[in-house]
Length: 294
Length: 262
Image (cartoon, rainbow over all chains, first blue to last red; front, side, top):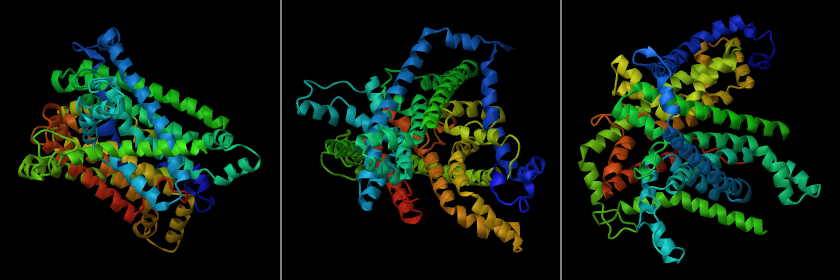
């Protein structure tokens, strides 16, 4: 397809696939070799050790993972946290993206907001989660404020609850959705919205029938990214759970760092990978369906 | 009208939510108390002095910087030729190759970190700088690839052919024609690659040791057991590095995000 777009066939003799491959090969050799050696092969090593038990091929490790109710509970917690995070991030991020792209008229203000939006993104998860450890503590600013204005009688425990983890993850992942939706909004041709208004639609109708469908691919891309990052997050849950809540990536980390059971750990890794990829594929399918309709 | 006002309120509340923890960390790093307090009680820079006196923090800053620079250089060297090949030639299994190179974006980093620990142990590279580096190159390459690929357009290709027709050698064409045209994408991709490496914990944590550690991993291990204002001071420094990077980025290549003109 690319060769066809490159222009006149006379200037592009590389149209025949075998020639194309021969020309592409020198450029591809290093990246492919590197990714095979340090990405594909390590993943195959994990997969193959997950399929070995006691020196013989076996599904025992997967039986150990899948037949234990505990793992299902941890998976449920992990994906519940990821789903809640994704929902909250979308509900908070979409209005902010819309506001920054469509409402803010001053370029200077938008630029300052973009800088503030990127600042958390450029700061380590540790630092950001650490900020929430200070804020969400028993005598932290959040509890003090809520008690001070009379919304609460006494401090609530946030650290060590799923709510605390969701607050921390929402914070970390919010910029991703704002950028994804914002960049999609910025490419929507405003004349389409004007046309809709000229034809008598209310701003509300215009938004839901013109703007929203046109930015849906950007939203879906952001949602998928946020969901996978939330489901595979280790640092934020580890810091904000206070050891009281376990998410799936923690189980994997334990197996490799303290127990060093690569067979059982491998089965846990592959399980997380497969569940995540299946959910991403499902979301992508729903997203594509929506894209085609619009 | 009410919708407008509501939108404005939500947007500003979300902006406040984004800034609050960073303000809290910087504030807490200035407290004169020996525990973390926000708002700070008294003002002191002692915690910064203590951080600088601890050579392990300085060493970790060094490791993080060297790792991020090397990983970015590696990612550019891999992603640039791959992008050129993918944009120019219609070879078999192109989509599969692109998926392979982009998949670290959706792969849980904990899984890849564990895989590399086991694999590098087998190669005798366990918990070494090399083990950290190969992992970081794998996770940051997609950032460069993703931002360079859209810039290799048919128009760009046509200019390249014109240059060749006029007798420029392939290397000259690359340097004088291709590179200037993809500079924007390359720079922003490289900066995202650098930052992703600089802040990474989930991948690094498997291959770091007490001596060889990056700043986020060191902070992570420390924060789990002790919380004191030194941590807030180290965190504030990383926030400052991030702020300077973003402003420099805005002033040099320009942050072309959320703007109507592209």
